[in-house]
Image (cartoon, rainbow, N blue to C red; front, side, top):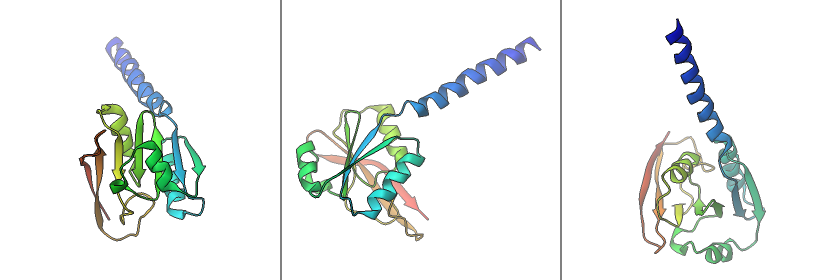
Length: 149
């Protein structure tokens, strides 16, 4: 019986640590056009993933993207900052969590354009898209491939 009590204690520690991690997610600052509905849908996706989101409205997202240093080739309808990383476009919250956990030397993540099926761009149709890891030199590689239904 003593071993069972210890086992429950160890499990409780691991479970509470997991829940505490969700509370420790950094704030995401989202820079977006105030009239963009898909940006608002992406912000909702992030909140549902456990992030605190601060919205910043701008009429010139291209200038914001350039100021932050995200290559124009990665452009989408919104640019965000989380910790030391940039997030461009409709990147899934789980990809952002993975980025923060792995902390690769990179500028950030991007889902260029506005691909159907990405968070905030759901259509109910099958779709696929890639989240790209963008290096500090602007080069990119696939970070995560997504297929939705």
